[in-house]
Length: 198
Image (tube, rainbow, N blue to C red; front, side, top):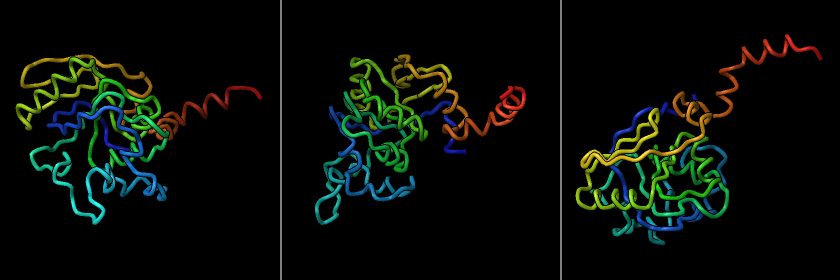
């Protein structure tokens, strides 16, 4: 299995109300040397998290102990810039299983879906409500219901539906990447090949 199955996630969230966060900010280019998915979480938002002497920047949200959870809430146009899949790897490796924004760059969205991070796109108004809820209470819980394609702010009961490609949804529910999906239907592929004349 490529990653944990995603069904219903209930968690507090880390707010990052910054627009146009690009992939170089998510994972700087100098950390792209590795080819395995492990270890990238240590350098997620590296230049925003740490000073040049590797001491944590106190003002950055990931260094603030009052915020935690498996959901990252970003501003509009999250994941823009280069197509590096390492950005999605870093988000996953840090421990986030969902990123919420009012707009995602298409390549980043697909890269997330390929590694088990659910990108949930909401309206600007609903995103603003999430930020306000977290500001009022850092322990605010969000519920991400993938089967019903719904996100809910549990404290207020406000909810909104989100879209996801059907194939990617099934893969997320099963914890499959594209290779796992093909292996899962290997028997059907073999039967089709055997019954199809050359």
